[in-house]
Structures are given as structure tokens and as C-alpha cells.
Image 1 (cartoon, rainbow, N blue to C red):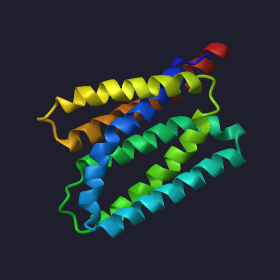
Image 2 (image 1 turned 180 degrees about the vertical axis):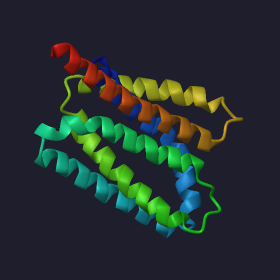
Image 3 (image 1 turned 60 degrees about the horizontal axis):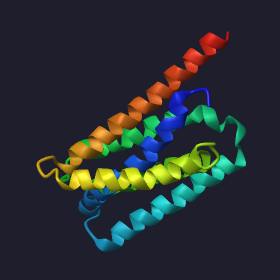
Image 4 (image 1 turned 90 degrees about the vertical axis):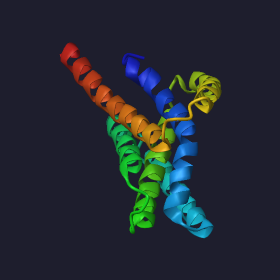
Length: 175
């Protein structure tokens, strides 16, 4: 694999999503107000993820060029989620929009990721890293969940920028 970021960045997203997910669930529970709305938001996420997965499968060739923007998009959603106050009147509607965007982007990413040469190695490392990180985070009590969500979003956004910069440098070197 020529680009190092393509080798390790998908692992950052897959591990980070699982680690951040409990914090995101807490935010989503507060945003949804009722259990019924909470389940509908997850249904919207699932349907949207299926659409993203299917869209990738339908047009595989140009998909690689969209991957940096996928990381930046997911990162942006997490940054927004981490910075929204929970007393917002339209929060359930924003949560729905965020669920649809996250679902679509994650479905698209997963469809792309499973076709990468490093996916099998990532699957093993994924479980190990998630376990170690979750044990480590269990000892952190003073940091707000919103901070974890925002930091993860910033990391993903930076990963997307790194993807773009690395691809541009590879093009410059090859020309």
C-alpha cells in the first residue's frame, strides 16, 4: 500500500466509532426525549447506512476519491454534536439529520473498508484496541462526554485532511 494513511486511518475510524459510541448514545438519548424517538433515530441511521453501503457497491471505481471527505464529514458531525447544547428546542430534528448523515457515511466507509487489503488485520486489531481504550477510558471521570465526541470528530477531520494532503503529495511525486 503506497499511502500510509490509507493503511492506518480506517482503523482510527472503526476503533474510534466503537469507543465514542457510548458517549454518543448518551447524547442521542438526551436529544431524543423518548425511547420511541430514540429507536426511530436508530432506524434512520440503519436505513441510511444501508443506502451508503449500496451506493458504494453500485459505483466502486470513483469511490476512493471520496474517502477523505467521508472522514471530514463524520468528523464534522461529531464536532457539531460535541458542541451543541442539550437545551436546544430543535435538537431531535438535528439528531435525525446527524443520524442520517452518520449512517450514510459509515455505510459507505464500511463498504470501502472491507475491500481493503488490510481489513483482516484491522478486524483483529480493532477488538484489541477497543478493549484497551475502553478500559483506559473507564478510569477517566472528569472529562465530559461532549469533549470526547468533539476530540474524536477533530481527529477524523484531520485524518481526512491528511488523506487529501498525502494524495496530493503522491501526485506531485509521480508527475
